[in-house]
Image (tube, rainbow, N blue to C red; front, side, top):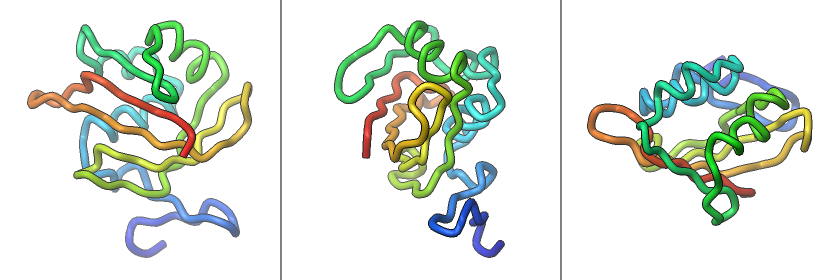
Length: 120
């Protein structure tokens, strides 16, 4: 395991969560992968917003339906923009696995004010 990469399967390499550049984004990914909704909500601002495939969504309903109830999991394959943009192999029990992109707006105090996701 060289350079912070872990072998996920024969077809892809992923970035270990601990190697993600931005601490808020790292906490977001850890919360998703741990199924920890409380930790997830703590990393967001009180008025955080989100969009899925370019459409703003009700965040509380969306995270329940897309992340926590169907046991979502993020395997990060690329990060850019100081860790605020990710390409992820995302999977959950509802949709299976898909390649997705994620963008995070992080405040100066280290909270996520907005995240956007969609198919990559």
